[in-house]
Image (cartoon, rainbow, N blue to C red; front, top):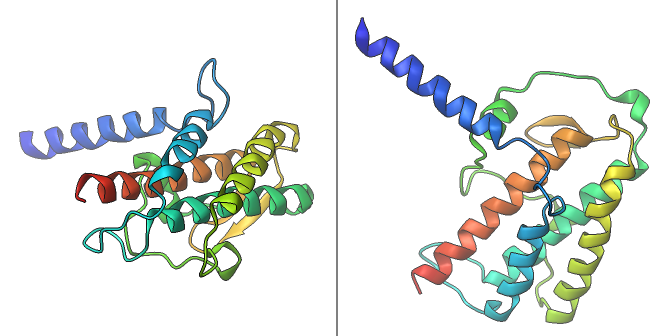
Length: 181
């Protein structure tokens, strides 16, 4: 009897800790400032690869992460807040609670796939646009929304949480590429 209670307590504590990370602010710094700073810093390692970690180089992860931020902003901005319907998603609940996306499970939509030849200038340009788009999110209606292929319809708060988790996911992959090189 004690083991199930201990297990339940552990899961509850982990869920609580993960939920606490769901805050979409970063204190005195702006939303996602540290992640965008990390992306800028990592551009210098753009050509590094490690096929044991990822089939693609660091530039791919940087470009993809920025495309996701910018594309989601654009879709949110052009969405109709009146069509948002709150719905439960088990996959979203798990991912948001633990702040984690499993590796190698999802397939990126074509609109956020990097080109064959990724230019540093393009990454830098997308980074500046991402900074502007992230800042603009605060001006959007809470019920702006977009459809995620796995998590379903996300409103602004959920989209911001997704952007943090998704970017963290790719930064972790980059960290592992650099660590094992």
